Length: 127
Length: 176
Image (cartoon, rainbow over the protein chains, first blue to last red):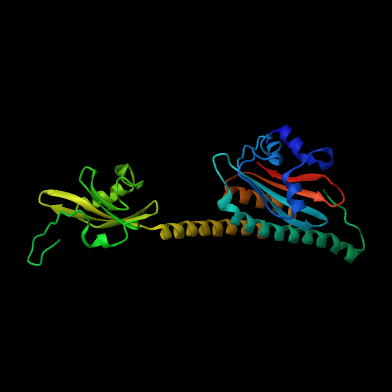
C-alpha cells in the first residue's frame, strides 16, 4: 500500500461521507463478500484505489471486545477469480482469531490489574 | 478375446459387446492407435462429444497410460473427472490400446473435498500455532494476519476497529 492509500485508510468518518466494508459488516453483524473489489461502491474507493490490487474481497465480523467492534477484511490476489471456495476457511480463521483477540485483551487487562491489586501502585507504561 | 486353446478371436463390432448394455452416459470405450489417433469410440468417449481427453491426448497425462499399455501392461489414471483403464489390444501386427473411460464425478468431488479439508487443516494448524505462541493482542493480530495471508494467498488482510464512543473506523492492522 502506498502512503496516500495508508493516509486514506487510517480513519474513515461515516458522517463525513466516507464509508467502508467494515461499517457495513458491523451494521449487519454478518459477513460480506464481493467477487471483485472494483465492482462495489464500498470497495472501489479504498481497496481498489489504494494500491491493494486485489480482486475478490471479503469482510467478516470479529465481534465486540474491550468496548470496540472488530472487523476482519480479506482481499484476494488479482490472479484469483474468486474467494468463494475459501469462505469456510475464512470463517474458521475468523472464529479462532476472535477467540484469540478476546483472550489477548483479557490477558493484558489482567496484567494491568494484578500489580495494582498487589502493590496498590498504578502501572507506569514503559511504552 | 483370448481363446481357451490359445490364440485370440477378434470381433469387429459396431458396439463394444456386452459393455453396450451399460449406460453410455456414464461409461465409454476408445481404441487408440500407436501414433495417438483415436480409431473407434463409444459412449462418453465419443469423438463428437466434448470429451476432454482425445483432443490433445498426447499432451495430457494420458500419454503415460498409452505408452505403458503399448508395451503390454495395464494401467489406470484419473483425469478431469474421468477414470481411465487401459490395456494393450493386439490384432495381428497392429498393436492398439483399448481404453475404458468411466465418469468419476463422485471421485472428483471427493478429491476436491479432501484437498479442501487438507488445506483447511494445514491453515488452521499454522494459525493455531501463531495464536497460541503470543499472548498480547497486538503482535497476536499481526502474526495471525501474516498466517492467514500466507496460507490463503491473499493480497491484503485488514483489521478494523470501531471504538463504541466514536463513529470513526480505525485501521488497526493492514497487511498488504
